[in-house]
Image (cartoon, rainbow, N blue to C red):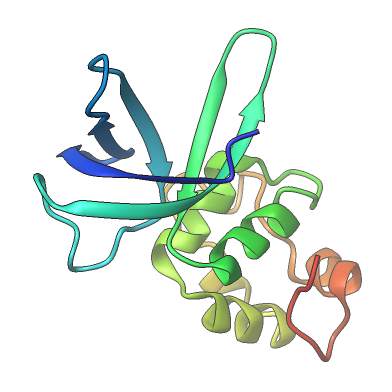
Length: 140
């Protein structure tokens, strides 16, 4: 498992960022919620990684801190919430905002990401609240 990656940002796109390693020209695409304002092509970046290995692909999800990665892990345990939706939620809300939205059962805030309208699966405030308790932030 890959836990952390550092490298030079080669490209930024709507789904993530690409980087290049100095040896052998290996290139990777990392799916990230956001890299922060300092990330620019040609600049250095260091990300915590969540690796998903499936029969037909390996996806690397990158996070700027432990709180983002912990939330991603917890969100993907909620029924109907996959990696794409968890990443979308984290791209529009900081972990502390997500905590408040779930505790307040704010369905509007949790429906913000593209593709998570009323007809799409999304993080249900009640199931999320039950999963990690009403009075604390997630700690996997």
